[in-house]
Amino acid sequence: MEPKTYKTRVSILLMIIIVVAGVLCISPMILHHASKTAIILNSAFVILVLGITTAGIINIKYVIYNDTLRIYTFFWIHKDIKIDSIRKMEPSRCILSSPAGSLKRLAIHYNKFDVVYISPRYQEDFINEINKRRKCKE
Image (cartoon, rainbow, N blue to C red; front, side, top):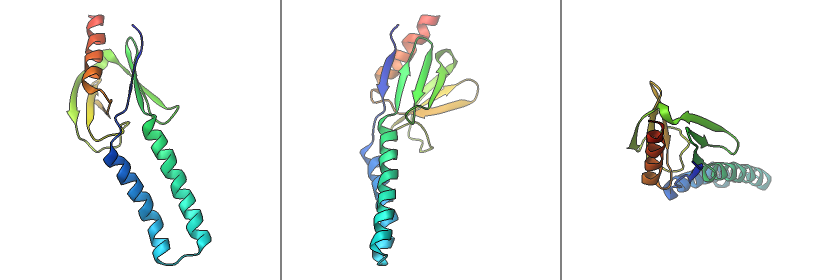
């Protein structure tokens, strides 16, 4: 079977929270009349961090190979999960840190006690594809 790629769902609310956090980092300096140099340097740093964070979220993807789900997170970092080890998949709104660009998540329970939260853009299609690959093994 051909590998199938799913991009992450990106939540506007999550992106707004990230931007507001960035603005809150800069605003105390402006309110307390810090020097222009300090404001510019702090702003540049915050913009850099926001840019890297946004790029990292937008680039999350999930690739289903024949027997493996590979979760690509921050550019080159990935996690492999054997499809045969997946015990259960269920909707979740867990806010734990995870490779997901949205709070509308899918909890994937695998191995004996492991769980990962992801947010594929097309969740039903993703679940169907995983189930189809699991049945091909039987």
